[in-house]
Image (cartoon, rainbow, N blue to C red; front, side, top):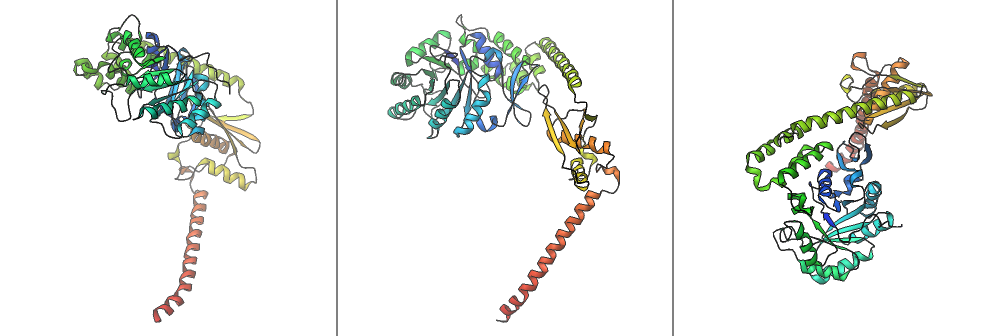
Length: 466
């Protein structure tokens, strides 16, 4: 695999560090606005990401990676495509590769959070370097002994990674402990690839010029800033820090524009307010239960209403456009009805799909075949069922694949004039069939029990007499 390193260099860069709950899209974009060269997303676990599907969100103009439950796990956009690094946590090389392949066309690089590295960590790096075309980096903490740390980074270098980010603290050390600049410097001198120094917010980085001071103290190629950027992302601004109120308002604009979940928005704003959390504004922010309420705290209620109205209008327009395209491209051979499946109208464990399958077996037709698609705009589902060479579907898109298939089955059953199993249809032959099957199983069990008892009685009698 040829690695394309021309698009992303890790030399002499100021970088937003990966931070859990902080490194979401609004913070990354704001850091770029203030001068960050590269931004890392928050660490995302491979097991969650590998279940995600990629969707192009035409309303927000983003690429969303969505979990089966509908939650957006990772959201990115064109603005950051050439400078965002996707960080993952993984303990499995093949799973890590699957995730990297899923996102690599939408990010500039892939990073593995190795923390305190395990034996499998370097295998993961080697697999990624060989398996994808984007640069691969990793982030580590230093080990108790310097010689062990140097040995580790040399092993990592041999995997072919583009850079190593080093948090200059040991596993047990917290942010208030001094950062080990001497160890980072020794690492920088021991390897030929770029070393990214991390961990300087407490001791060094209070304003932009301090970033260069930390770089010189560690002899690193680049600097990765975490908490100092979390408190005020304008730390990346060459001209100096911006007033916090201005920074927070710019953050909120991105949060609204990109539909960031209000709990994440609130968390990040609380990190910025810090000692001001006990002020009237801080208490109001803490009490906010929606993005709109957060905007009102910062006197941005009008911006919220205006932006959400624009997004809603865009969504409505796109829905109409998609509907027009569906109507023009619709297969004329598909029989359609506006049907929605409501499980409350059916007995427990009885569904239209079961009735349709039973009918096909009785009539000696092949079993029904369901073809289900998901619409990217709203992630709703539509299913077409083929029965006896005819196709049927509901014109109503549903929130799950299962519901869409049941709706398609209902359309077919109604067009064929076949009972669908609803509670108001009177005697339900499937329920009666199940009762008979259950009774037969019970009778067979009782018969087996009688046989077993009959076999055991003489033995027990002999045993008791004996």
